Image (cartoon, rainbow, N blue to C red; front, side):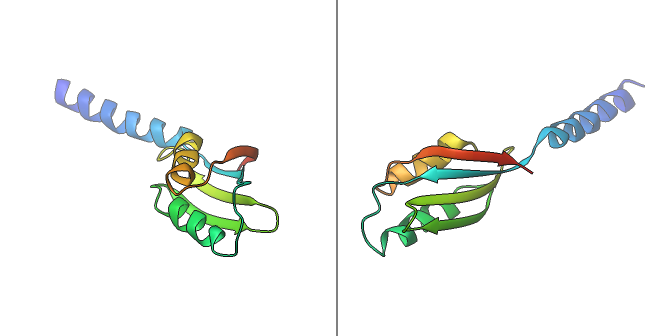
Amino acid sequence: MLRKFTLAFILASAFAASAFAAVRTVTLSVPGMYCEVCPITVRKALEKVPGVSKVNVSFEKKEAVVTFDDAKTTIKALEDATFEAGYESTVNGEKTK
């Protein structure tokens, strides 16, 4: 009986954790991009972050729009990725899908 209860609890916990995960889209302001190669560097850095599914970087707007799974990564991790690539970034806007 205890074994069945434990298995049921584990399965319920796994389902509950995934139920709270959300695909989110955030816009990062990246003011330090100064040339046409900068957006490529920023995009590649963000694409390496686990949980990131889409990255769109605009040199003209000096921003990166990132879609990610918030169960796998955080906005802080995205900001850290751009920083490690040589570009500071801050959150400009966000929406949850």
